[in-house]
Image (cartoon, rainbow, N blue to C red):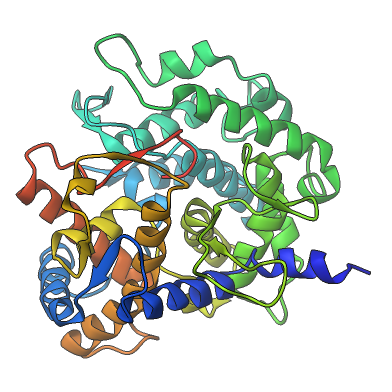
Length: 412
């Protein structure tokens, strides 16, 4: 039986904890209790208008998919992954789902900020594609070419042993990195994939129940938890955090349990060992959103999608800073670079999560939609991420976020 401190640590590995602690941070801010930010909720209506405008432009019928990695595999109106997957012969729906879990997990882990300079030249269109979309197409090309497969005749898979021994040179070449085309955090990304490979190999009970060990084995682990064909989305996140948690480098631990994307802030109080801790789980939630569609295609009913939270990343966060809902107490902080674990960045990211919930209610009211017909995952896609990017480019020619974060390629 887990002891009390282990249960406390595990309580932070949930979407519920992210939402609760982010809410506490917002209350502190509204009462003037934060070191780095003041909050002006009167400006939220303007943010909602901006989000509605970009949403209507991108999705005129308001049929909005989830914010997930699959959106980035669509280029020039062509869904690259669907084209591969529909042409392949899968023995059953579970086989396709395992491949899609493989692809989503590796692609999301490679999806930290690319920096403003890097571009991926797409062989099909000849286009140079930057940022998250470029990383996505690059990772899809790697997957389709069999870079992560241990079986030459079966490219659409990721094998634990192939990942564990992944050469930095292979990723460098696949991402087309050079002196004139630098990619931020390449070593960090390579290390993360190797860690994933080692973990998956060690945990064949989780990742190898229906095949040799592969990240896609997480599909079977999650599918086994379904009740009457239904799976709540927060259970997907719990599986991601509990099973993949050990891959994250040198982060906080509580009673030996790695806490992942979780940071210290002394203003957050609790009456147990979790006091002062702020979980955010950005990449893990982005991954969890990206695993919903493979589960749906495999025949599962994914419920409580709003049980996941908004994502504490720089487009969503920048949306609130650029629209001046969040204001820096010290304007000079906009010019400084900040570590991921700095109080300023922890405040910014937690406030982003809490404000996204408030923003979602405003956007639904303007569009006449319910949480069921317009879940947060669709508002993020419609939505807040695009509006954050749009105002960033309107304010700064390179589209950089309003705050500078020193990233190691494993958080954003």
